[in-house]
Length: 348
Image 1 (spheres, rainbow, N blue to C red):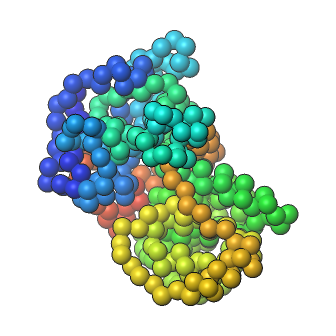
Image 2 (image 1 turned 90 degrees about the horizontal axis):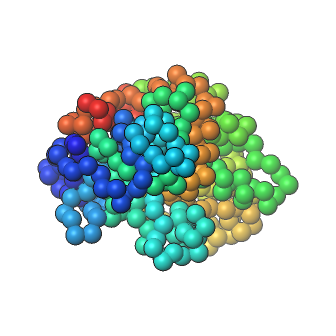
């Protein structure tokens, strides 16, 4: 079968190659890959050396945003031939730590987890892949190609689960969300915000391309400029840029009791002068919370699939702006002005 392989940090060594069929010890469910979503993590792996191949091997099959169809599954798996599915990325550590032991591998305590296409385990950039049933999520066929968005949406489902838990500490219910960044993660964050009944605002650097219309079509409000000049006082912030200085600006621009969720990781080296004492005073006296979130457990994939199914199908399809064959995988790493989300067609 064909698979894309990379040497992390060596972009010129990315290639499409023939590989053996996925081994049965990868899992009892055999899946035919259809689409692979591309995100910033893939860029970091290919170009900046993030990620780790399986032990003893120099090359990694990338890809953690998957959509496929079941070719074979055990009778008691809850899956049947032809089912549309997405693969779960993280695998619990072998010890396991207390969170991994109960399925909360996204909160692994000892770091010995593995991740498909990222950390010590091959990903989904292959014509076929295997997984055990507990790491395969069946999707409603009505999602169509939009099912490839389940993995990134799972990160936001987890974020909103945590936001809901934290805001429950107060009798005052949050009403307004600010999402910073209008890339795929930001737009999915805005989608889930509207589904939570929030007045939703999205801030981005650029108002060209399809992003403003996509936000407005959700019933949200699109903004550019400095966060301090928006005239907004959000109760919830979903930060999707990973831009460190912006995080500090947000801490002083939110409502009392506000919650700021960080979903982005910066690869830059920006520095900013901050009054730590003033920041500490604001956070304490205003009951504010700032937290980070990464990855997702199985329930978050299921929540994401349900959220996408509630969304407008044409709106979701407009997020998939670029499709390339397997041989052009590296081309999908670069975005044009009109691009939101690039995907690789694993059948082409």
